[in-house]
Length: 285
Image (tube, rainbow, N blue to C red; front, side, top):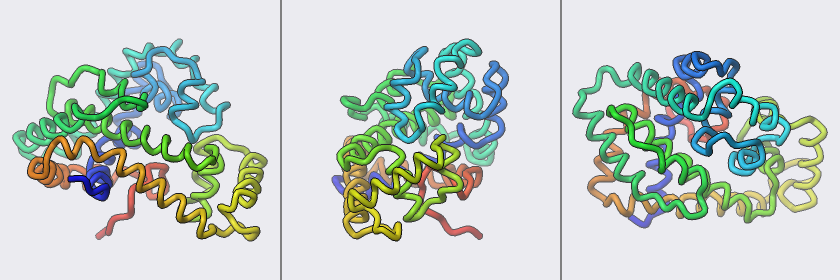
């Protein structure tokens, strides 16, 4: 149960459950119903709502990869359109409606057991130093199985993300440098740069700094140093996320993986090939 690889396997099962809130049309419709029109208003309001009516600075820090001006365009102005409480209700409503579409063929007992086990894992997250994980863990449990399932997945997802950001900080790279490096390895600049709000000038300057720091060659190819350091980041992320599974135990963790498998497989169909989620590719029929 101390194998960090286990945390990565479970992440690939609960992350798609959480991700319906970003990609399913029912999720967007739920935000629009409370006045949050436009994708990014719903995104920033929904994800930041557990923090309360916050301004931009804490979200810039916690979300890590966004250009500060992009966050500042949404926060705190979104709270004039919908309160954090309204945004929380909207995000849960949209997520549950999306999950209902993906799980209607599964028995109720399957969903209840999956929710109970995922809640048990989420209830054992270590929140010290993990702000987004902590505020999501503090939210009340949902009343119905799909609501409980989604909220538990979200707590675990943000807990893992907090640990990932902490590991990234140890590299000495800033957010745009991290994105620029990943886009020289396995991601698309055409997608990630506009999706995170960085200008061409900021991106070019980041690549120059990556050369100076030894992460890229002068030809903008990843160096062995950069690849090894980022691999260490991923390993640290997995180690920091293993606690809930150790607490859940081997038998219940394996049972949860089995229960989540068909749910995650269906939820992944809504995630675009180009997305910032970072899930490993799966075979498609």
